[in-house]
Length: 207
Image 1 (cartoon, rainbow, N blue to C red):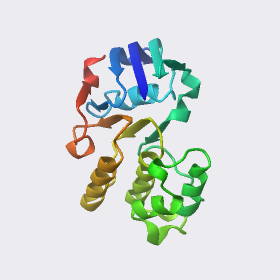
Image 2 (cartoon, one colour):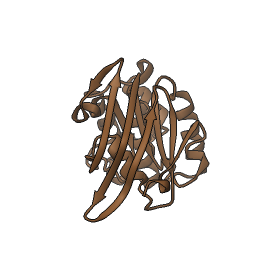
Image 3 (tube, rainbow, N blue to C red):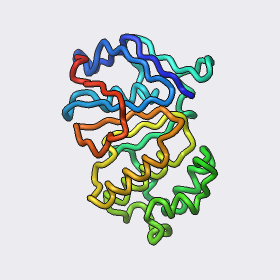
């Protein structure tokens, strides 16, 4: 199980601090929501946790069973879904699932066929992603991230572009696959996105 420690983490662009002075421990198996208005720094903090951004100040530490994981290797242990993350548009859904399977196994012994079925997009599995609606693309992102067998799951506004039925689908999907992993969710207070979280961080407190 993955343990993450943020020790006075801060990120600055030019002269503006996006977040600063963040102290927090994500204990193994914790479920945490990062709350705040648009532009408050939620996504920046999530990208710091993901190792995609380097902190301007402070230290970020990852450990698994007392073994320290270098920040440049944390990508091996996480999966992430966010509306701004690009999918490979020229791939079909089938090809997208098969491609990810080369790098990360699926949870609970699932197969690529299972993943496509669970996504609810079986009818479009041979269609190029470029021809998917925004809601369908978000289903793909969520399916690939949540169903990957990773100890760290990062979700940035997971219900973006989802209609009512798709939000119900997301709720069931995360409920079925939230065990034995650390989860961090960014949300602008849409409770359907983080109903399973037991910890909250108000990012607006870290300016």
